[in-house]
Length: 136
Image (tube, one colour):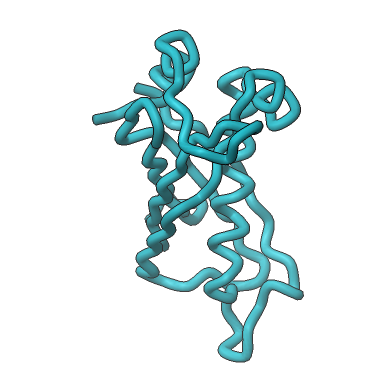
């Protein structure tokens, strides 16, 4: 299993009234991680469409452990924990430069047929690209 690592910067517009990173920013960070994961698997969004399906989110969960503040560096990780023919669970962690986990999250994606907008079963070949980043 391999986790995909990605770095994130904190910008002033991401800070909320409590002077730390707004909760909604974590969902944006998950989007960044998800897109980087698809790219690392050789399935950037423009290539997925060529295969006749696209992933959509159906669930997001986040656990906030300790806030991030302006000027800190965020180290993100994303990996696959559950893979079925029509859906996938992705796990995320966000840590500081010392490696302390500040937040964790997970998202469930559903594979949808581009023509019918109905759930689509992936082929064994399509599922295999997720295995490199699978744990569980």
